[in-house]
Image (cartoon, rainbow, N blue to C red):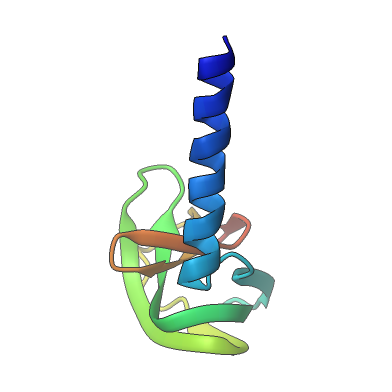
Length: 108
Protein backbone atom coordinates (compact mmCIF):
# COMPACT_ATOMS: atom_id res chain seq x y z
CA UNK A 1 0.00 0.00 0.00
CA UNK A 2 2.80 2.47 0.85
CA UNK A 3 4.58 1.75 -2.42
CA UNK A 4 1.36 2.45 -4.30
CA UNK A 5 0.83 5.76 -2.46
CA UNK A 6 4.47 6.72 -2.97
CA UNK A 7 4.10 6.05 -6.72
CA UNK A 8 1.02 8.27 -6.88
CA UNK A 9 2.84 11.02 -5.00
CA UNK A 10 5.85 10.84 -7.33
CA UNK A 11 3.60 10.91 -10.39
CA UNK A 12 1.75 13.97 -9.06
CA UNK A 13 5.05 15.72 -8.33
CA UNK A 14 6.31 14.94 -11.85
CA UNK A 15 3.16 16.43 -13.42
CA UNK A 16 3.42 19.55 -11.25
CA UNK A 17 7.08 20.04 -12.17
CA UNK A 18 6.33 19.50 -15.86
CA UNK A 19 3.54 22.10 -15.77
CA UNK A 20 5.76 24.58 -13.95
CA UNK A 21 8.58 24.05 -16.44
CA UNK A 22 6.29 24.37 -19.46
CA UNK A 23 4.88 27.66 -18.22
CA UNK A 24 1.29 26.55 -18.77
CA UNK A 25 0.35 25.80 -15.16
CA UNK A 26 -1.39 29.18 -14.87
CA UNK A 27 -2.62 29.33 -18.46
CA UNK A 28 -6.30 30.11 -18.98
CA UNK A 29 -8.75 30.56 -21.84
CA UNK A 30 -11.96 32.28 -20.67
CA UNK A 31 -15.20 32.57 -22.65
CA UNK A 32 -16.45 36.14 -22.26
CA UNK A 33 -19.51 36.16 -24.54
CA UNK A 34 -20.86 35.80 -28.01
CA UNK A 35 -23.03 37.42 -30.64
CA UNK A 36 -24.84 35.77 -33.53
CA UNK A 37 -21.63 35.90 -35.58
CA UNK A 38 -18.69 35.90 -33.13
CA UNK A 39 -17.41 34.44 -29.87
CA UNK A 40 -15.16 36.43 -27.52
CA UNK A 41 -12.44 35.04 -25.25
CA UNK A 42 -9.65 36.29 -23.01
CA UNK A 43 -6.46 34.30 -22.69
CA UNK A 44 -3.77 34.41 -20.02
CA UNK A 45 -0.19 33.10 -19.76
CA UNK A 46 -0.26 31.02 -22.95
CA UNK A 47 3.08 29.73 -24.25
CA UNK A 48 4.41 30.86 -27.65
CA UNK A 49 2.70 29.38 -30.72
CA UNK A 50 -0.46 28.30 -28.91
CA UNK A 51 -3.27 27.56 -31.36
CA UNK A 52 -6.89 28.34 -30.51
CA UNK A 53 -9.37 25.99 -32.20
CA UNK A 54 -13.10 25.22 -32.09
CA UNK A 55 -13.95 21.71 -30.88
CA UNK A 56 -17.33 20.06 -31.42
CA UNK A 57 -18.38 18.85 -27.96
CA UNK A 58 -20.39 15.91 -29.31
CA UNK A 59 -17.91 14.44 -31.82
CA UNK A 60 -14.70 15.79 -30.29
CA UNK A 61 -13.49 16.86 -33.72
CA UNK A 62 -11.48 20.04 -34.13
CA UNK A 63 -13.69 22.14 -36.36
CA UNK A 64 -11.74 25.25 -37.21
CA UNK A 65 -8.17 26.21 -36.39
CA UNK A 66 -8.57 29.87 -35.61
CA UNK A 67 -5.41 31.70 -34.75
CA UNK A 68 -2.03 31.41 -33.05
CA UNK A 69 -1.44 33.46 -29.89
CA UNK A 70 0.92 33.76 -26.94
CA UNK A 71 0.97 35.60 -23.64
CA UNK A 72 -2.23 37.33 -22.53
CA UNK A 73 -4.92 39.23 -24.42
CA UNK A 74 -8.39 39.07 -25.88
CA UNK A 75 -9.72 37.59 -29.09
CA UNK A 76 -12.94 37.81 -31.13
CA UNK A 77 -13.42 34.80 -33.41
CA UNK A 78 -15.92 34.53 -36.26
CA UNK A 79 -18.46 31.71 -36.21
CA UNK A 80 -18.93 31.87 -40.00
CA UNK A 81 -16.83 28.80 -40.81
CA UNK A 82 -18.63 26.46 -38.38
CA UNK A 83 -20.99 23.88 -39.91
CA UNK A 84 -24.52 25.21 -40.47
CA UNK A 85 -27.13 24.58 -37.83
CA UNK A 86 -27.02 24.47 -34.06
CA UNK A 87 -24.14 22.92 -32.19
CA UNK A 88 -22.29 22.76 -28.90
CA UNK A 89 -18.64 23.83 -28.97
CA UNK A 90 -15.73 24.93 -26.84
CA UNK A 91 -12.44 26.62 -27.70
CA UNK A 92 -9.26 24.68 -27.06
CA UNK A 93 -5.79 26.17 -26.60
CA UNK A 94 -3.16 23.65 -27.63
CA UNK A 95 0.44 23.53 -28.71
CA UNK A 96 0.90 20.58 -31.04
CA UNK A 97 -0.66 17.65 -29.22
CA UNK A 98 -0.32 19.32 -25.79
CA UNK A 99 -3.61 20.55 -24.32
CA UNK A 100 -3.12 23.85 -22.49
CA UNK A 101 -6.56 25.28 -21.64
CA UNK A 102 -10.17 25.33 -22.79
CA UNK A 103 -13.30 27.43 -22.42
CA UNK A 104 -16.66 26.39 -21.08
CA UNK A 105 -19.07 24.87 -23.59
CA UNK A 106 -21.27 27.25 -25.53
CA UNK A 107 -24.13 26.85 -27.99
CA UNK A 108 -24.29 28.23 -31.52
